[in-house]
Image 1 (tube, rainbow, N blue to C red):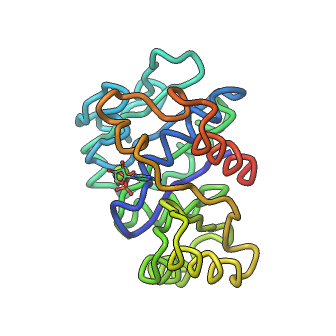
Image 2: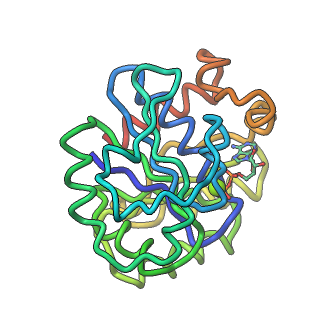
Image 3: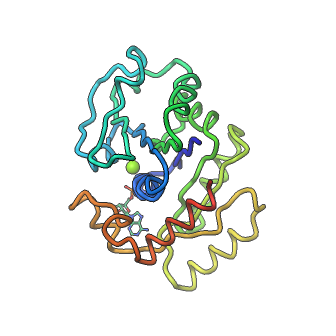
Amino acid sequence: MIIAIYNIKGGVGKTTTSINLTFTAAKNNKVLLWDLDIQGASSYFFNKNPKKRKIFKKSIEKIIKNTKYPNIDIIPADTSLERYKNSIKTILQDLKSLYDIIIIDAPAVLSPLTKDIVKYSDIVIVPVLPNILSLRTYNQLLKENLNKNIKLFVNGYENKPTHKEIIKCVLKLPKSQYLKTYIPKDEKIEAMPFERMSVVEKYPKSPVSRAYEKLLKEII
Ligand SMILES: Nc1ncnc2c1ncn2[C@@H]1O[C@H](COP(=O)(O)OP(=O)(O)O)[C@@H](O)[C@H]1O
Ligand SMILES: [Mg+2]
């Protein structure tokens, strides 16, 4: 199954979600995390630097890197993706035969590459921060009509009136457009890059880790 984490907005939690869902899924599945963002935040997390790997010229198996976690492999960020023109469909099909779950950390742009990713993923998960403008960008993405299975979820929820209002707005959307689970705002998440450790690993029983488990269950 291919799960793309995508939003045309930056700083909404795409990388955070990709990493924590990867660790959650890896408890029972062979997982590949593909860092498609040339900024390479997910790659940094696994100690891999963005490089020019000429991703479409080599066989894809040569691009995949192991991590210290037996169930997690990664395709690090690749600056040659900037000049993308091929179709990514066959690559994704090949990868699907190697892994139970493929999680794609997509960049915050609407480009030929991200359009293809959205088109050929089984599900597209869109983190939105609990405010009206974030909901608006989700609607802009829907208008592109790239995939029928694009679902938003609220990230960074705090128990306060404005955020509660946003949840009410979300619950009024058609059921096919959202995931019920929301991820709370949690300082432990902000500390992740310092230690290069996901909250799911470090605090497996915390409410935020449980929220990621629930989110994944809703997805698969
Ligand atoms: N649920 C959350 N609680 C607290 N901080 C969060 C949460 N989600 C994301 N963040 C923080 O917000 C910032 C942006 O998140 P990031 O995952 O890098 O976004 P993106 O990949 O969409 O640009 C990071 O500093 C991250 O630690
Ligand atoms: Mg990111």
